[in-house]
Image 1 (cartoon, each protein chain N blue to C red):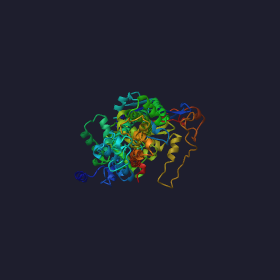
Image 2: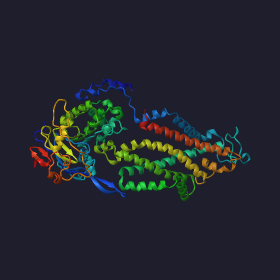
Image 3: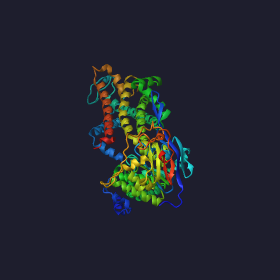
Image 4: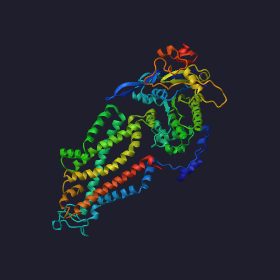
Length: 310
Length: 326
């Protein structure tokens, strides 16, 4: 940094007469990129930080699950069925004597993976379709937009159920179904952003410089439509996990003995009177993860929205 | 100031741009807006041709149609004796290194997520300067040419003032040593004090790099300051085109006369004959028959309602489209 500043001071004064005014007053301006600004903004948001902490907690819990618990998530212990929380079983045991804490910890892996892959899939395909529709317009736009309309006409969970019914019940197929129902959400978002960007003068300028469409899309349109995509992806993470839990609850997602939180809820709903912890613990876990992602998403939305800046 | 043997760099013949108006349930075409309606003119090498007219008269559309940033509906655009309206996209793309544009709004015409280095260097990259070292050097050079400094290269557009941003836009347009620059109201978004600096810069650059400008503006004093010849547009048509001095001293077309009489003068006691136009500019989707100006023209005759006047040379180098002079 120091050498850079020294260089600046050595700059010769500009001799061009038309530029006398341009002896820049604020010569020690920090060279901040828009992304760095966003990060700074985000760090000021306490709710977003809380969201990060929650998500980080579950990530660590999932990744290092074997370090947190010596119990296995699938080993049954029929003698110790439906034990209440104790020092031995922190969150108690379920109807076949499995340690609930172990299942929650390993289940965090499942949920976060589902969220990640479903959102990534939806994001990639949705963005691609949205850009094509928005940039090229005309009949391509009509076709893609009508497909989005059709997908959005179904209640999303119903559509997911139908897709899983066709593909067969498994965690992987549930993931595919969740990705598909999220494609039009990303697609529409990107399409509308691209359409508004296409009218911007700097896009016309790029064309006037002699850039090809591919370069205009990759270097000019995509970086400028990233903000809403990032926000939607973060919020989508939460809904994807929720949808996966719903499918799991219906028996259409993860199959036993996979420690999927939704399936755990379904498996223990007969014992709600007898052993409420079997439901409360996975329920709260789902809620916390979704809450975490929503807090981050809201924080990002504020940080990325130029109008929110003071 | 003109070269001794000026030859035409740009020839526009019968340029038209009609925008479809869609309506109804099925989005059928229900009409068209004649944004540019049969405009012809020639720009000589090294000259500055000013184009003036009020908002919505088709000045900008003309400028953008010349570069095919908006596809013209009809007509011919000849750049160095080559008709460019039917070039395929790749040929057109390569030609863009010779024909550039400076936009009106310096806040909207620079990508907010790119550094100045990328903004100014990108046209170099897409036209074959692949070495980033060379580009860096050239960007620094360009920034200094337009009155900024090399160290500005690493900053983002939001860290500059309007005038500085317009300088960046000019540097970008200059990157590939173009022959022609279309200036689409380059100073109308700037403060008056900054306007003159940018205008002076543009004049210096013209001399230094032998540029040719088509200078589009709505400010008559700005155009008078910078142009060699001036064209006046009304409702998508060119109504008068001549040397700057002739136009400002001896305007022929009643519209030009009205326009010039509205220019404020520094002397408050000067008594002038003001030509006050009545009514509004008619809609370009439904322009008047005959001469488009006859609805507001103080000297309109019967023929003006029926016959569209030809754009003709009534005096040496003085083109007018008006029945008064035929």
